[in-house]
Image (cartoon, rainbow, N blue to C red):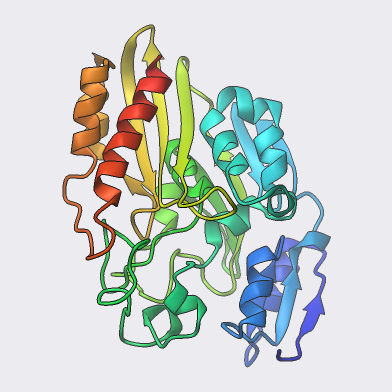
Amino acid sequence: MKTFTNVNPKSVQEAVKLLGQQGKTTAVVGGGSDLLGMVKERLIQPDILVNLKTIPGLDKITEQGGEVRIGGLTTLATISQDPTIRSRYKVLADAAGAVGTPQIRNAGTIAGNVSQRPWCWYFRNGFPCFKNGGKTCFSIAGENEFHAIFGGGPSYIVHPSDTAPALVALDAKFRIAGPAGERTIAASEFFAPPSKDPSRENVLAHDEVLVEIHLPAAPRGLRSTYHKELDRESWTHAIVSVAVALEMDRDFCKKARVVLGGVAPIPWRLPKVEAMLAGKRITPELAAQAGAASIEGAQPLAKNKYKLPLTKAIVKRTLTAVAA
């Protein structure tokens, strides 16, 4: 492992300045569960680790003007157990509680979870793929059981975050700090497909920090949940997941947001399915139609066609459960 220096900034501005040092390779440390593994695997070899845990106030959940604001260093365990999140934004609490093991949830942060790198075995084992600066996606003709069925090309990784689909479903906003100041963008604009830059999964520059996540005031009648399917009953990432947020008026759905995970390089929103549900009573028959529509446009690879019926079933089952 390459020797590196750990620095402890006292403010976000100081952290941004440290990240922008010329001639140095820098990396942000929050919970560090993913970063440490990547350093050990020599996927990144930083000169400087910028530890954000010494900055006060980045691990708080607060309310302001009807919004709920979550600091980037808030742990997944805290989010999954917070009474305000559980009562108003259940989909996010469910998603945070679905991540890894209790040990990982106690250390991992919300900013780290949405910013983590893909877990494709070619990338993690140092193959010269698109994610490692190469010009090949080895999964296309290789082992692709867990790769993308939507939005692939030139890389076919899937985004590994559980909380990302939930945040897109809630129409959250991300507050980002950088050398030019702060900017706020929609969660749906934070994640970047490989067609934009195959070496990146989001729009964060190397000298920017995800400071805070803003959840809009929960609309009346919001019902939401997150469902995740695993390939084994142990710590692993979703092979298919779905985040559902429905604004209900008694039995009728006024507005819907349905976002898939585990099937694309970014959280994969289903606008056609959302339009099918809006203004209607969600019956088992409508839920089945929505499940069928959820895989329209999918382009599975040789070994991941099983994700098609699995996605249909998960969408149908989750919509039925939320509506009930």
